[in-house]
Image (cartoon, rainbow, N blue to C red):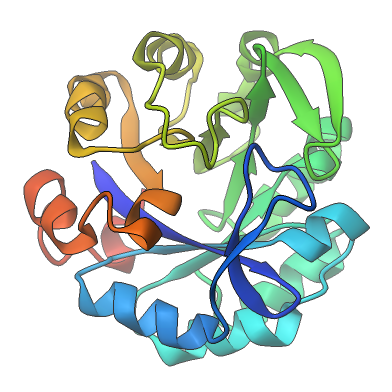
Length: 250
């Protein structure tokens, strides 16, 4: 499974939130581009970037910074947060982003998701984030009465390359992963899954590794690598195939 470092952007800074709640941010760097270079230097074959301001506002707010990050490293960058129309998807792809993550708009409009996948094959991921097993949207400020498993049903015909699933109730807490819940999600998904939320130690990665045969393609690390709870280089060497780049991006 690919070990993927996250860079969350708020006000042009690299931050981490607790359970995605606005106002809980801890600033870890004033230079997100430098952070991206550091994570690539540790061996990252893919970097996950979230425009938090965009997620809350419903439109990109750190577009230029995201593009600067993508230009600064050779590893592919995937971005999400506030991408609600096909024009924005196209702008990111034209700027060299490896993949665009669609959430709120795609969940509310499966035809939009289908259109984006058809226009940019292999470049679209679905962000399907849950709280209490229910799907959350609009920067995680609204929880829908939709079970993730129900939404996943039939997704294979849409053309999504991967589903990125965040356990919101654990995100940014370092409390550990709920491996059983993640296993249920992975087994329900017809496409590969990248998991996120709660990873605090190498033991959490150990707990998730057995899910690879069922479709777990990667794990996103956030607060754990910023606080030093997990050494990114060590995690990549232990759990990822060395040198994974764009041609093996899950």
